Length: 336
Image (cartoon, rainbow, N blue to C red; front, side, top):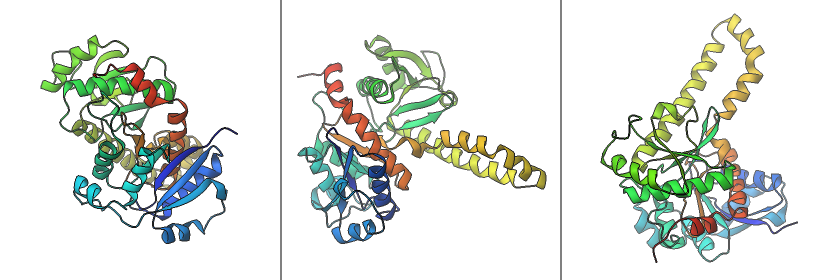
C-alpha cells in the first residue's frame, strides 16, 4: 500500500467536540486505509472518546495539547499566547511537515490567523481565501472567498479565480471550470467599485475560463464552477444557502406529515426524496480549504458532526495526491 496521508485533526474544536470529532476520525480511517489521523487535544479526554470505538490502532494517534482557543478570543493574540492549544499545535505539525494537513472546526479567526502566521503563504499569494464546495442542481460549485478576506482587492479576487480553477480541475475533476464573479446583474458595467475593477482583470486573465457575472439566484442552478467574491458577500451567500436548505427540509417534512393522504404519498416518495435532499447536504463535501498556504489547512463548520469531519479528512487525500500547492506555485504568476 502507498504511504498514508497524515491528517492532524483538532479534537477540541467546534460545538460537538471531542465526541463528534473523534467519531468522524474513526469513521475516516475505517473507510480509508490510506489515511492516518493524529487527534490533537488533551490526551486523557481524547483517549476516553476513542475507547468507545473499534478501529485500526495503527491509523490513529494522539498529540497532547493542553490549551483551547475559545471562539470569542482575539485570534492573533490567542495564537501568540496559547502555544499549546490544539489549533497552534496542529498548525505547527503542518509547518514542520509532521502532518500533511490540519482540519479544525474551531475558531475561524484563529485558524485563519494561524494559517498565515504559522504555516505561511505560498510566495506571491497575497491573501489565502476560504473555499467551500456548495451543492447545486448539477453538482458542486466552489465559493471563493467565504470568510477570510472581507476587504479584498481586485488582485486578490484574480488569484482566488486562479486557485479556485486549479482546485476544481484537479480535486473535483472538472476540466476548464467556468469562473464567474458575483454581481447584481449580468452587464459588465454593473456592480460596486471592487466588481467593476475586477471584471476586466478576470476577462484578461489567461488560464481561467471566465464567463462573466453571476447573480445569486443562478448559483443553485450550477451556472458556474468557481464563484469569486470578497468574503463578506461570500459568507452571506453561504449562510443563506445553509439556512434556506435547512428550512426547506423542515417545511417539506411538515407538509408530508400533515394529512393521512400526504403520509401515504410520502412513504412512496421517500426513497427519491432522500436521495435528492442528500445531494444538497453541504456536509457531504467536507470543509473549506484555506487556499494558498504552504500546507493544507481545512476549516469545517463549528457545528460539524461526525459525517462532515470524516469527509473533511478524506478530502485531504485528494488535495495531497494531486499536489494542489505545487500546481498553485507552477500556474500562478508570482512576484519575486
